[in-house]
Image (tube, rainbow, N blue to C red):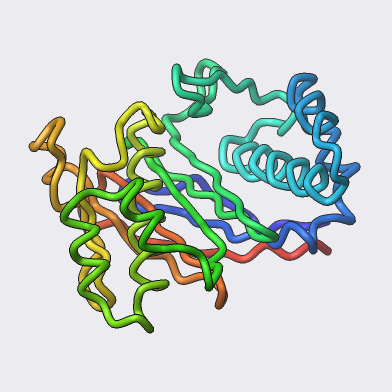
Length: 241
């Protein structure tokens, strides 16, 4: 197994790693050795073998890349979890680094940067879902109106643009669904700039965050949220040896 040599992100850079979890299935034993006891227990609770392998590859790869970026063995990284489950490094004396991991179906997306919190979301774009019903349950009034205004052929794209941007922002601020999805607005119309355009719980938030769309394979949508206002994205694809 090999990984392209990784350097710690410079200020203003976001390193994005795209991982094919199916391709990584042959590395599960190596990656499992990196995991903590509680991570192995979480994996063992997954009864479907494919889901178990995907979890091991995603978490093992997270440790591999963070370890290389910080010059520390992957198995020696210690993770803690915020009040809403967002992971963070507990190792002392390491350079300031922020990260976030998301996976859907057979792909995972890992984001790493310095200084500011970061959030990333990747979703499998599944046609035929009741998009309007889901939007009316979770989205803001403005987002629902915009989704209704789209031609039918653009509804899927608009829905997943909205969903991934909202999830990336929630993961970046670390509150999860403790911040209601309908308490803030993001852009969603195809061709519109990705953006946080309204936050009713804290209006000043709209000037603090940048939301960017991430180019991922067909059938997926992804977004990243960051406090860097003009970040440089560096996208890498991992391939097992």
